[in-house]
Image 1: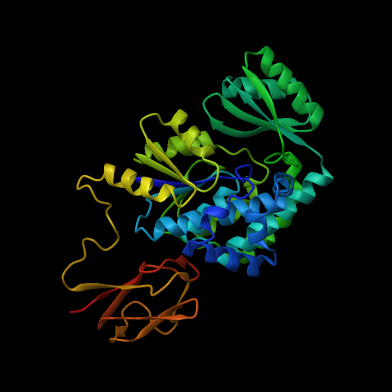
Image 2: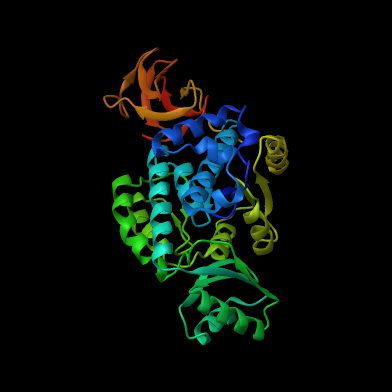
Length: 391
């Protein structure tokens, strides 16, 4: 089984959008700019490292970049069994799975970034990566520091991030070294993320999450908070709220994917940081990082190498003779026709929905069994939208 993972803040790089400008997936940048009221194209093409370090820019650009990669991968016809994302990447994973519509995802990420930026200014903090020390001893170092410092990320074996006040992080870093850590590296961030310092941001974000109304999904998403797979939209309001001030249990998320039978993990988005973590945590899993259009051919080879038949197993491959798929005419956000639901009779040419402004017309006559795409989901050209039974 295949899982898609999505990176978080810190993966952004100056010019990371340049390889995508001539690709069809670049259209997401224009859509995101309109929704956010920001020039996302400028940030992806011309912003320097300092401008991108701003939490408000880092989160939005990483989110949009990762979804561009996802869009390109979906155009190849490859779909995951599970999704997961590191911190901000959890919002990308939820958008990829269809729990969040693309426009809701952009608005939520923009609000989250602004809330975290403001919380960071109100409660100045910092973070540091502790390398080569067991999780439990890093927690001991934080407790012994007797200050405002906590574990923020369990990333991989021997890689834990701590966060809190500058004095607390410095003191805990020294104690971690005394306990055997190989290194404690300060991180260039604008706040103590995933700690109680983010409580004001959590309070501010609750309403925005509720307004987005996360939906149920067929592809479960593994949560940073409890490292469990969730497919119920009702559960995500609490999980996303708790995530802001709770540690990211990424190592545990990876272990959960392994327990669920995942044997291949593809990181979609800039940086490739999560791929290294996956290699350290699940040594038997096959991994790949897809960040640019040049990586797509390697991705196809990687997928095909795992297929018993030497080819990716695409949606609809095993349809019965009396079943037909209706596919999208273009890429964009899908909206079903309200009057046509499961069990409705569909004739040739019936409009069953819209992708952007383009009509989705059935090429077959039959009875609509179910929509495959959900309302608000971003779909690609030729992606299956619904399936019919013709007799």
